[in-house]
Image (cartoon, rainbow, N blue to C red; front, side, top):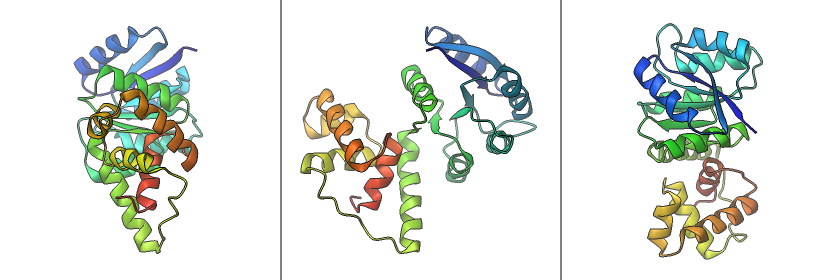
Length: 215
């Protein structure tokens, strides 16, 4: 299945370079570009993309307000935020309005493509630089609401070790190195962890780790 992608960024050279990069993937179709939020709204309505790759700091209408207006209009397009800023407030606002993924612009092409594919499936992804911030914020909210840690008996000792590292923003490769196991073994552990915690992506697994009192 080919995914239809709209790229939205006010920096023309970056936007065009990103489009060229993504166009080399046979499973992605770049259906359009936009330089601000208002243009993005028009393009989404006209082109009906599956995923919008969106910057946050833009003229006329910023990324957070763009996401909000898309949701108010009833659009089900998936939003992947790609920005140079990891400002806490922007992260929380974008996720609250419905962004599924939040990546920084120094992400690799592979990470961006993976985030697009995962978003199309309704799964989220956070850059390691912001994972801890989000988890910490949810933990603060949980403490304020008086939540109590859940039982971790369903997870093995090794799965708990993997989950702790994931929640701190470690990649599969970094987890493998830290635990002296193969990267493929890490993937197997994550599949098991996701199943036991009833989550389908790393972001929600990290949040559950915090709820379980593992951090």
